[in-house]
Length: 212
Image (cartoon, rainbow, N blue to C red; front, side, top):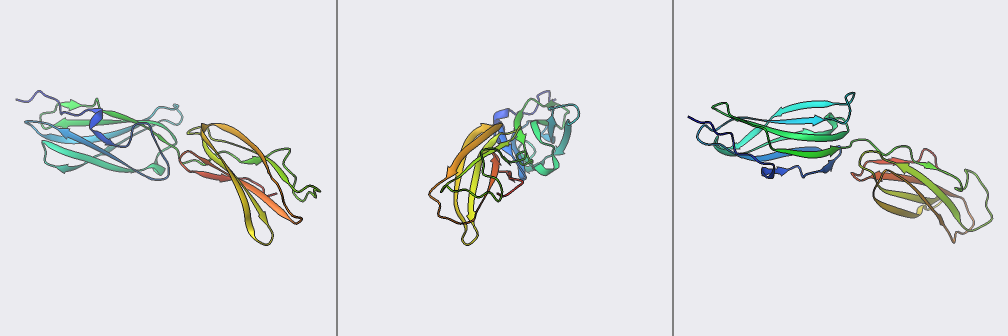
């Protein structure tokens, strides 16, 4: 007679990390489970995204056992590009051969496969084709990322002979919207171009829609 549920706790989930951010990658769920005397019959991993009813996903995967029926590691690898962006709860369902079920272990993660929103130059950035009489180029660039936040904005300076000659990177914690203003100074006479890129905190990248 076995009336005990499988032994499984959130602490037994060795991966993914709690509240981790994942993008365009493989996410492996790994958990250790013990059951005696019946032994584990099946383990399921359930992904639930409750961000909104329109974008809600509820997906369940059957785990692979590594070890014997009474004590083993169970894992499954998910391609995050199959999931919509959002905050997910991963629940572990384990039932033994006597039908006892435990579904108390869980882990929260963020899936973000989307690049930051449009990266744009704003005034007082020098305009395309503008002739200036000073030895500096000023710029202001804005970008945003609503889910995991911006990680950095990099502005690049080029000329028509040597390619990239300078760049400046501003890093952030996880700001959702951040303008960056500065300048490239001490420039010799010549033709120069600037553009910019924005990375979110999981390194999805977007570029300015124009080069000036």
